[in-house]
Amino acid sequence: MFSRYKKEPAAPAKPAAAPTPKPVSTAAAASNPTPTAPQPEAPKPSMRKPTQTASAQSAPADKERKRKERLGEIKLELHRELLDNLNLSALESASEQDLRNEIGAIASEILQERAIVLNREERALINQELYDEVTGLGPLEPLLKDDTISDILINGPHQIFIERSGKLQVSDTTFKDEKHLLRIIDKIVSAVGRRVDESNPYVDARLQDGSRFNAMVPPVAVDGSLVSIRKFKKDKLGIDDLVNFGAFSEEMAAYLQAAVSTRLNVIVSGGTGSGKTTTLNALSSFIDNSERILTIEDTAELQLQQIHVGRMESRPPNVEGKGEVSPRDCLKNALRMRPDRIIVGETRGEEVIDMLQAMNTGHDGSMTTIHANNPRDGIARLENMIAMAGIEMPIKAVRSQISSAVNLIVQASRLQDGSRRMTSITEITGMEGDVISMQEVFRFQRTGLGPDNKIIGHFTATGVRSHFSERFRLWGYDLPSSIYEPTAG
Ligand SMILES: Nc1ncnc2c1ncn2[C@@H]1O[C@H](COP(=O)(O)OP(=O)(O)OP(=O)(O)O)[C@@H](O)[C@H]1O
Ligand SMILES: [Mg+2]
Image (cartoon, rainbow, N blue to C red; front, top):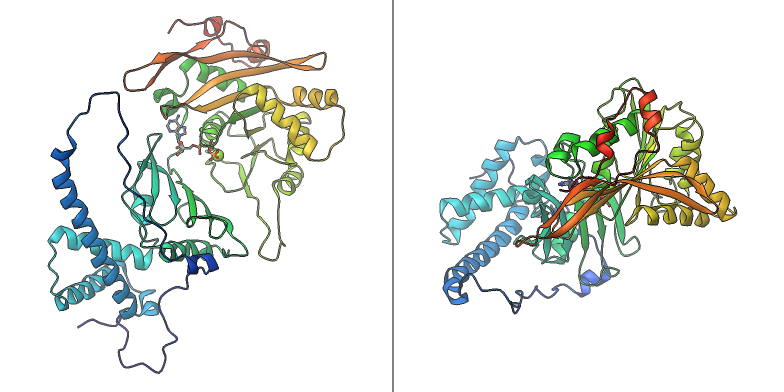
């Protein structure tokens, strides 16, 4: 009954056109085909009163679980048959509707043959999943489409964590097995001309929608492939959104506007996933439209609103170890491209030398991020990066270079309740002897923990007047002295 998309049954002479994309083959994956399924989490002894008895919940939960298992099995079977039946090369030119119709038709035929009865909702779900499997990234598709999810973290085929509103939770989506997961990884990385296998066990890539993707496959990943995806947000959070979300205060926003507009060199410091890139992106909105900005990133995430922007993406070496274009190469070249400002997505290696030099020599107003838990550690990190780049300079000279290049450290933190906040704005004011002198101008003052484990606190000025207040005034950003007054919360 199906049309042109169905493979001709009478073509046994050419079995080579196997539609199943080749899985990423690793010895471990082959030898370890069924990683143990995650055990349901053992109930933790709780000191708080339970909300519902376990037995009251278990019957419907059991039924739901069984229904899901059954659907899962049917889907796998259908998927296998579908791949055997569909002519994938004809599919490439099919319209979405044609393809959906086709999948629906094949699925119903198979269901009918096997006398499997599904309700309308289950049928729609299965058809959608089959469609995602054939055209997209299978179980990842719905997670990628869900805008409320910001991160997807996969620990082997049977465990997917997702982050929503700053909180990690286990998703009920899983892959069939490691082979299935490897097939999806392979689909992603081969689309960007990369390969991942036993000899190149990890890879960075960018998904079509701009999301950042990293995967590591067995045997280096012991219990099945590890994947992390940072979803690309089409509408990046702007300054107003961040103020509304309580990431920083109006006063801090006004101060940051003055700092960026008067071309202070800014470093955004923070831990993994603390909101560094988001902050950098929001700060960049204060840059004037007339300036020429060059951005350098490993994976292009920044979305600048200005008209005069040149974006660069560094490139790792290819499989033969050739073709690398490091962030430092990009930065060196950027300096020849007459930028007004340079924004480096993250400084973590030898490019630190060129970054500091750029900040010191006419490209003031440049910005970057570093991984550090507080501003003082941020400085130590810069010192370490310089030492590791093989620059032999007395520590005093290194510090003096840093203190004259960097004006401001903005600390981003992900607090234990999942909220992301700017916990400190610290100015670098010069050197005292061998030590870089710093002053904190704003901070997040924690005052307690709410009943729902939400952190209670408020933003406050520390009472110190900005070292740059005269500069702000001369550039037309005459901030009222009241913004430097501490608030009681
Ligand atoms: N203040 C905020 N409120 C809510 N969500 C936020 C906030 N800041 C950032 N996010 C979200 O948190 C996620 C991580 O943010 P971001 O990419 O900026 O972190 P990062 O520190 O650059 O991470 P990495 O270390 O992986 O580069 C993103 O999905 C972003 O949209
Ligand atoms: Mg980042």
